[in-house]
Image (cartoon, rainbow, N blue to C red):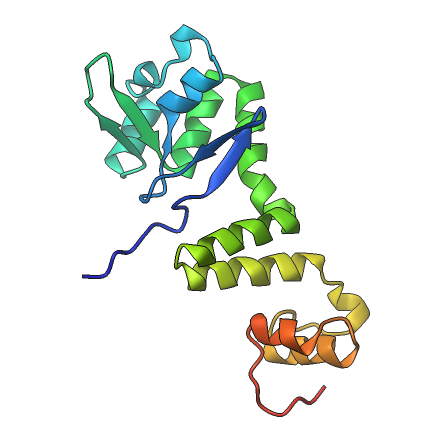
Length: 181
Protein backbone atom coordinates (compact mmCIF):
# COMPACT_ATOMS: atom_id res chain seq x y z
CA UNK A 1 0.00 0.00 0.00
CA UNK A 2 1.29 3.46 -0.94
CA UNK A 3 1.31 6.08 1.81
CA UNK A 4 0.15 9.27 0.10
CA UNK A 5 0.68 12.44 2.06
CA UNK A 6 -1.14 15.73 1.59
CA UNK A 7 0.68 18.42 -0.41
CA UNK A 8 0.95 20.52 2.75
CA UNK A 9 2.21 17.64 4.92
CA UNK A 10 5.06 18.79 7.16
CA UNK A 11 4.90 22.37 5.84
CA UNK A 12 5.91 24.89 8.43
CA UNK A 13 4.45 28.35 8.92
CA UNK A 14 5.97 30.92 11.26
CA UNK A 15 3.62 33.19 13.20
CA UNK A 16 5.14 35.77 15.58
CA UNK A 17 8.45 33.92 15.36
CA UNK A 18 6.96 30.58 16.38
CA UNK A 19 6.93 27.62 13.96
CA UNK A 20 3.83 25.48 13.40
CA UNK A 21 4.03 22.29 11.36
CA UNK A 22 1.23 20.60 9.42
CA UNK A 23 0.56 16.93 10.05
CA UNK A 24 0.60 14.22 7.32
CA UNK A 25 -2.95 15.21 6.38
CA UNK A 26 -1.88 18.80 5.73
CA UNK A 27 -3.66 20.14 8.80
CA UNK A 28 -2.41 22.56 11.42
CA UNK A 29 -3.27 22.24 15.11
CA UNK A 30 -5.37 25.34 15.85
CA UNK A 31 -5.41 24.51 19.55
CA UNK A 32 -1.60 24.56 19.61
CA UNK A 33 -1.54 27.85 17.68
CA UNK A 34 -4.09 29.37 20.09
CA UNK A 35 -2.23 28.13 23.17
CA UNK A 36 1.32 28.96 21.96
CA UNK A 37 0.43 32.48 20.83
CA UNK A 38 -1.60 33.08 23.99
CA UNK A 39 -4.67 34.22 22.06
CA UNK A 40 -7.70 35.38 24.11
CA UNK A 41 -9.62 32.66 25.96
CA UNK A 42 -12.82 33.61 24.13
CA UNK A 43 -11.08 32.82 20.81
CA UNK A 44 -10.41 29.13 21.51
CA UNK A 45 -10.79 26.95 18.40
CA UNK A 46 -13.40 24.91 20.27
CA UNK A 47 -15.66 27.98 20.36
CA UNK A 48 -15.03 28.77 16.71
CA UNK A 49 -16.05 25.28 15.52
CA UNK A 50 -19.61 26.07 16.57
CA UNK A 51 -19.87 28.92 14.05
CA UNK A 52 -21.71 28.52 10.75
CA UNK A 53 -18.51 29.03 8.74
CA UNK A 54 -16.62 26.40 10.73
CA UNK A 55 -19.46 23.88 10.41
CA UNK A 56 -19.39 24.33 6.63
CA UNK A 57 -15.62 23.83 6.59
CA UNK A 58 -15.97 20.76 8.80
CA UNK A 59 -18.51 19.22 6.39
CA UNK A 60 -16.02 19.62 3.53
CA UNK A 61 -13.18 17.98 5.47
CA UNK A 62 -11.28 21.19 6.21
CA UNK A 63 -11.62 20.82 9.99
CA UNK A 64 -11.06 17.82 12.18
CA UNK A 65 -11.32 17.51 15.93
CA UNK A 66 -9.81 14.93 18.21
CA UNK A 67 -11.64 14.13 21.46
CA UNK A 68 -14.34 16.61 20.48
CA UNK A 69 -16.32 17.90 23.43
CA UNK A 70 -13.66 17.07 26.03
CA UNK A 71 -11.50 19.59 27.83
CA UNK A 72 -8.47 18.18 26.01
CA UNK A 73 -9.88 18.46 22.51
CA UNK A 74 -7.66 19.49 19.63
CA UNK A 75 -8.95 21.27 16.53
CA UNK A 76 -7.03 20.60 13.33
CA UNK A 77 -7.54 22.64 10.19
CA UNK A 78 -6.42 22.86 6.57
CA UNK A 79 -4.81 26.04 5.27
CA UNK A 80 -8.26 27.32 4.23
CA UNK A 81 -9.80 26.66 7.62
CA UNK A 82 -6.76 28.03 9.46
CA UNK A 83 -7.19 31.30 7.57
CA UNK A 84 -10.93 31.32 8.35
CA UNK A 85 -10.19 30.75 12.05
CA UNK A 86 -7.61 33.54 12.01
CA UNK A 87 -10.22 35.91 10.51
CA UNK A 88 -12.61 34.99 13.30
CA UNK A 89 -9.97 35.80 15.92
CA UNK A 90 -9.26 39.29 14.47
CA UNK A 91 -8.45 41.11 11.26
CA UNK A 92 -4.90 41.66 12.49
CA UNK A 93 -4.41 37.96 13.27
CA UNK A 94 -5.87 36.98 9.90
CA UNK A 95 -3.31 39.21 8.14
CA UNK A 96 -0.52 37.71 10.24
CA UNK A 97 -1.54 34.12 9.41
CA UNK A 98 -2.08 34.93 5.73
CA UNK A 99 1.41 36.45 5.60
CA UNK A 100 2.83 33.33 7.27
CA UNK A 101 1.37 31.10 4.55
CA UNK A 102 2.41 33.45 1.77
CA UNK A 103 5.99 33.66 3.05
CA UNK A 104 6.71 30.24 1.58
CA UNK A 105 5.50 31.36 -1.82
CA UNK A 106 6.87 34.90 -1.75
CA UNK A 107 10.42 34.16 -0.67
CA UNK A 108 12.20 31.83 -3.09
CA UNK A 109 14.89 30.99 -0.55
CA UNK A 110 12.22 29.80 1.89
CA UNK A 111 10.48 27.87 -0.88
CA UNK A 112 13.76 26.17 -1.77
CA UNK A 113 14.35 25.19 1.86
CA UNK A 114 10.84 23.75 2.00
CA UNK A 115 11.43 21.94 -1.31
CA UNK A 116 14.65 20.44 0.05
CA UNK A 117 12.81 19.26 3.18
CA UNK A 118 10.02 17.80 1.01
CA UNK A 119 12.58 15.93 -1.11
CA UNK A 120 14.24 14.53 2.03
CA UNK A 121 10.83 13.23 3.09
CA UNK A 122 10.34 11.49 -0.25
CA UNK A 123 8.00 14.04 -1.84
CA UNK A 124 10.17 14.54 -4.95
CA UNK A 125 7.36 15.54 -7.30
CA UNK A 126 6.02 18.28 -4.99
CA UNK A 127 9.57 19.48 -4.32
CA UNK A 128 10.26 19.81 -8.05
CA UNK A 129 7.07 21.84 -8.57
CA UNK A 130 7.99 24.19 -5.73
CA UNK A 131 11.55 24.60 -7.07
CA UNK A 132 10.27 25.46 -10.54
CA UNK A 133 7.88 27.97 -9.02
CA UNK A 134 10.67 29.62 -7.03
CA UNK A 135 12.90 29.70 -10.11
CA UNK A 136 10.16 31.31 -12.20
CA UNK A 137 9.66 33.98 -9.53
CA UNK A 138 13.38 34.86 -9.52
CA UNK A 139 14.05 34.71 -13.25
CA UNK A 140 13.64 37.82 -15.41
CA UNK A 141 12.01 36.09 -18.36
CA UNK A 142 11.46 39.35 -20.30
CA UNK A 143 15.18 40.10 -20.26
CA UNK A 144 15.77 36.57 -21.52
CA UNK A 145 13.19 37.13 -24.23
CA UNK A 146 11.85 33.71 -23.28
CA UNK A 147 8.08 34.04 -23.04
CA UNK A 148 7.70 30.33 -22.40
CA UNK A 149 8.97 30.55 -18.82
CA UNK A 150 9.81 27.20 -17.29
CA UNK A 151 9.23 25.18 -20.44
CA UNK A 152 11.87 23.32 -22.40
CA UNK A 153 12.24 26.32 -24.72
CA UNK A 154 12.49 28.77 -21.84
CA UNK A 155 15.03 26.67 -19.94
CA UNK A 156 17.14 26.26 -23.08
CA UNK A 157 17.04 30.05 -23.61
CA UNK A 158 18.14 30.65 -20.02
CA UNK A 159 21.09 28.26 -20.46
CA UNK A 160 22.04 29.78 -23.84
CA UNK A 161 22.05 33.32 -22.37
CA UNK A 162 24.16 32.18 -19.43
CA UNK A 163 21.48 32.94 -16.85
CA UNK A 164 21.12 29.33 -15.77
CA UNK A 165 23.65 26.53 -15.54
CA UNK A 166 22.98 23.40 -17.54
CA UNK A 167 23.01 21.34 -14.33
CA UNK A 168 20.40 23.60 -12.69
CA UNK A 169 18.25 23.56 -15.85
CA UNK A 170 18.31 19.75 -15.85
CA UNK A 171 17.35 19.84 -12.17
CA UNK A 172 14.39 22.03 -13.13
CA UNK A 173 13.24 19.52 -15.73
CA UNK A 174 15.22 20.28 -18.90
CA UNK A 175 15.37 17.23 -21.14
CA UNK A 176 18.88 16.05 -21.87
CA UNK A 177 18.16 16.06 -25.59
CA UNK A 178 20.44 18.23 -27.75
CA UNK A 179 20.34 21.82 -26.53
CA UNK A 180 19.18 24.41 -29.00
CA UNK A 181 18.37 27.96 -27.99
